[in-house]
Amino acid sequence: MEGTIMTEKTKIKNLIPFIEFKSNYKFISRNTSVYEAYSLFIDQILEKKRNLDVLFITQNGRENESLLGLVTIEDIAPEINVDK
Image (cartoon, rainbow, N blue to C red):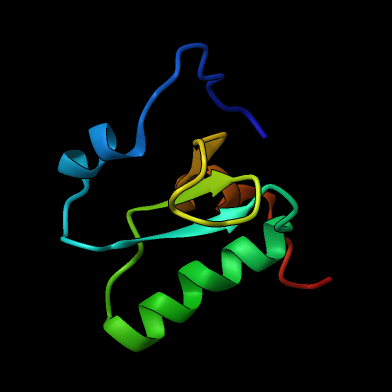
């Protein structure tokens, strides 16, 4: 997967205003697999008829933890092989 490394201490609260739909994000732990992350996007589509804007990655998947990274559906969709 390609991505961007965050080199500064980006705060989640500074990213929230850029999310298209209010509360359209989730938190995941750094140990969440790409398949688990993909399932979160798919579940959101099925339940809300809308894709999640972003998954925020923290140590344990808690919103009060430091941001380690983020992932969008565009980041992981090419990595998923549904035939596996």
